[in-house]
Length: 248
Image (tube, helix red, strand yellow):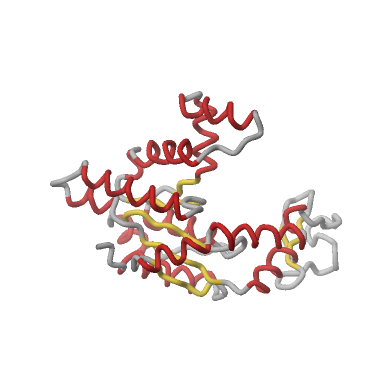
């Protein structure tokens, strides 16, 4: 179901400087849905490190060519290179009123770098209160969802290879088990939705991302939202956090 903020809210929100926003949460917590709603309502870009990386490679920038060489060797792109790309992206004009970071930071080390980078950006904009607010300390919204709810959301997914429609055997099953309602094609399970893959993804999340929760909580920037609520209610609470958070 598609959810849209009211036009009145959108007009009011689009006039505001939101500053940086970070969404935290495990796979299937609803980060993508909320990021889209925030981006559309407040008129700020959703910045994905994956998109930044692919863009730099496609444009054959100096950073992109370095990253391409590393990836062609089968190695992971190091933090330093990823951070340089993020720093460059944050200087672009569409980030002038704020931005949403998608998939970054993933580790405490990256979070520490981001804090220093935003501080550096504020230092370059002394005397311009609006510009400083746009690169203030981030508001961090954590979507909290129980492990078993996440498991059902992911392992219960089935998709139609013909029309692309997605079902869930627990919450949104097809009329006939295993068959697409639209064209009668047999539904399939994506490899990423297998139980063992989900378990590994959750393990990686716990090891890498959960320490970020403590990092931002200690700094008074963390707002926790129950991600098991209806999408509209999650949206309302996320918007409230963006509007009311103390970024000092």
